[in-house]
Image 1 (cartoon, rainbow, N blue to C red):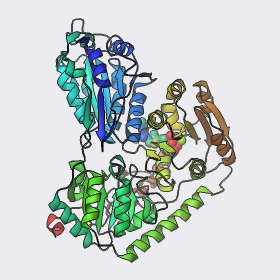
Image 2: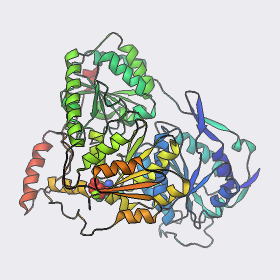
Image 3: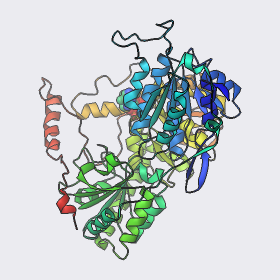
Image 4: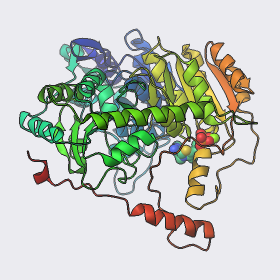
Length: 609
Ligand SMILES: Cc1ncc(C[n+]2csc(CCOP(=O)(O)OP(=O)(O)O)c2C)c(N)n1
Ligand SMILES: [Mg+2]
């Protein structure tokens, strides 16, 4: 069949499916894009001609469209994503931040940046970077370190093997992340005789590798000998749809469960064994149990510094068992590496641990501490602070108004930490805080992806004024697509999170407040949202209950009221010498905390049964 490279790629993508547990779905059900030279007459022309098979969504910023694809992929448990097509140059490099976000969060996105001429006939073309040392380099080489797969299609026949490799990486739970196919603009428009089989329906099985029997036995032995075991559940539990298996293991053994940002929702908040959030933005319950834990079973977690409180949370001699589909995570903290799918591994562990339960006192302590934390949450939700409400009270209202299956979306600022501590999750897919990259501007764009993936759920986007100012424009895309969002714009006139951090490191909130009094609600109105300016918490509730279409409810909060303390540390280095008293005093505290940091060497001989 004679088609251009652009047409062949779009027709190929329209015929790719993912399959896990016998359930098939389109791997790439649509394509976001912004056209310019470099894609308008190649991939753009193909989308015009084959739009029935591959619906096109016009975005407003290339970074944002990658966020939307990542949000979609996360809500779909990585079984589907969007493609993103851009022009060459700035259109392409705008996607680099989105690529990094996707790869860090281990979320599949397919990026199709336009590229300079392969023939180089008229170089330098508009927006071409000239590298005096290589005529083969373009700005798209910047995608290499932030992509899990990268290729440049310099000749049509390269597309076949490259497209197959791209699909393999997108659908591999261990390798997935950003996949970049750089498409020189001349090659996109070139015709070629493609083999028919290239366009045949192809189903990519998403694997569930089992754990090795010998390591599984060692893990079970280690847990059976544990006095104070703890499960740390990460995003992998949710992506693998392993929350039921986790609940079963926890209930059968009595081991309490703490959750990372990506893992929040693994257990319902009111499950007696749920300790809630762990780490620097954790609950005092999870952190107290973590400090005393002798064996930690990490499931699908990358052990970010927030999770481990910069490696100060767990005891020096704590032993780790890491159930993870990704080898790099399974080997962290010199743990016992159960390289396996989370669900397969949890089910096998439950069988291997049959008849054994953790010490009842340990479980009772966990339940009691979690109950105490829930009282702390209730107090934070109902502070009665004035004249402006506290942010925690805003979160309380949104949590109460939203339904159990609705999704809260957030990414940067002070809200992710507060949500991690306070939000009462009632569904494994109800909590969506992007905290791998914590990228300001993800919120609204990511929310679009979530809503496209789960049209039957209401999506509550929590966005600070700083994040809103970085990337509000996708409101237009949401309105255009009829993607209903309930956006809560928390206005505190500055970077409250970084202000608090700055103060804690002795830098006196320098450079974190605005001296302006901008009207962001007016901006939202101009972009096409229905806008509600809430003066009180009751107003906020009414605005959310009345919401239809794309709605922005703005509320002003007091930036100086934080959420309840986690009693955990986060390593942010403080100047070693300074003429400022505030900095010198912060440095002293820093040095004290620094002494609590561990290496977690977990010698293997200790791990052997
Ligand atoms: C793209 C990007 N730039 C900078 C940062 C560092 N940063 C984290 S939070 C924050 C301020 C966020 O302000 P706002 O959205 O108003 O939330 P608030 O801190 O007031 O809760 C900054 C600058 C970031 N996370 N992402
Ligand atoms: Mg702010």
